[in-house]
Image 1 (cartoon, one colour):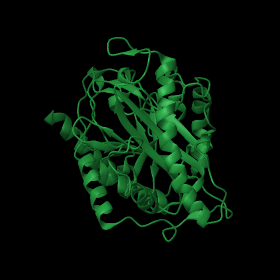
Image 2 (image 1 turned 135 degrees about the vertical axis):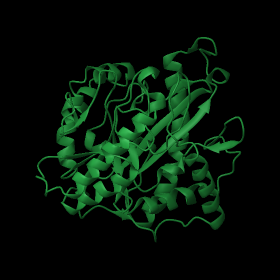
Image 3 (image 1 turned 45 degrees about the horizontal axis):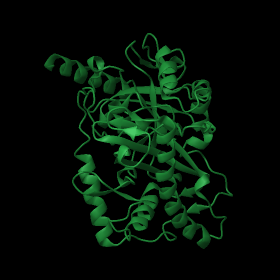
Image 4 (image 1 turned 180 degrees about the vertical axis):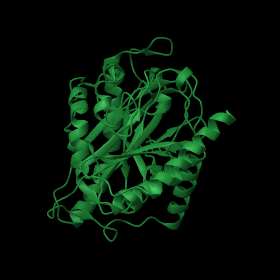
Amino acid sequence: LCFGAVLMVTSTWRRMIHFNSMAAPEQDEPLYFRGGEGLMERMRKYCRDHGYGYEVAFKGWALDKKHQRIARGAYDFGCYQDWQAFVTAYKPLYDSLMTRTGDAAAVIALLESQEMCQKVGYREDGNSLGFKLNKHQLCFHYEILRGDRPTRFYMDIDFYEQPWEIVDDCSPDIGCDAAAFAKREREVLDGILKYVADKINEVLQKLKRPTITPADFVVFSSSRETPRGFKFSFHVNLRDVIFKTTQVMKDFVVGMLQDVDKSDETLYYDDGKERTCCIDISVYRRNAQWRFPGSAKPEARLSPLVPLRGEPWPELEDALLQIPFDDQTTIVEGNIVRKPTRKAKENAGTLIKNKEKQMMPVTLSEGEETELTRNI
């Protein structure tokens, strides 16, 4: 263990020396970096100083616990000239994903082939143009969200439920009928989206913009069975509702939730210890890493983000959060949203701190549930 740590530090130090003396890059090629969080900040500044405008995190999670060692503080990053350059590289993989309609197992099978992974930041021999991906790993990608950039409205929704207590055709022994589970998933999600849509419409009406409905949300699911019961897990965004910064968006979400009582059955659930809000506010942070469709978290590497059952994959451009917006786009600024109260901010800060305590990377065993909130 100590020997491995020394190698990692030495390798990172050499990269930093090389990094300091790098010549100006050719912008038609992406740049790739591997190192710790400190190096990440240096990399991002270097990329921006040289005109690169879009940043992606790469995750090579292993399928089995034997090879699932997550190095603390280790990152793989790439920067591209702009978002379109990454879309061009990623689109062959995404087009293949779009043929696997809502089927997590088929997505995993595609990524196991690695042929597509090698087109997007990974190379079979791990040369300087990308990261080595060994035979035990799948390639996953995360959009790095800059805190100072206009961003589509997004939410991370998570809650647990014992569906056999609610849904017919479910039992704790054999699980749930797929159709019954999908119906329940849709029911609970619709209630959440209706509440959020109503609050967003209050903002849009102030701006004299067309209102939205729950059907306007782009939704991906990585819902799955866990030792705690079923975990309903969704990534949600809106194509045409743009906030000036992630801080403005956070203020909106905290303000939206501050009047909701914990007894509310739509937005709160019983986690076994207390009533918990299903909308995770810790995702509105600087440098948040937002999963691409088809990508997974390490503790749920067999449950990638896929569309809801029976729903088609959206276009890739509609799934990204920080694409360039034209001059006609309405941007929600801080003076429009309702400001959260001091108490609401304090409560939000406590919730985020509790989340951050769970962020330390670990070696995962089968069935373990560990939240690494840098990887959303």
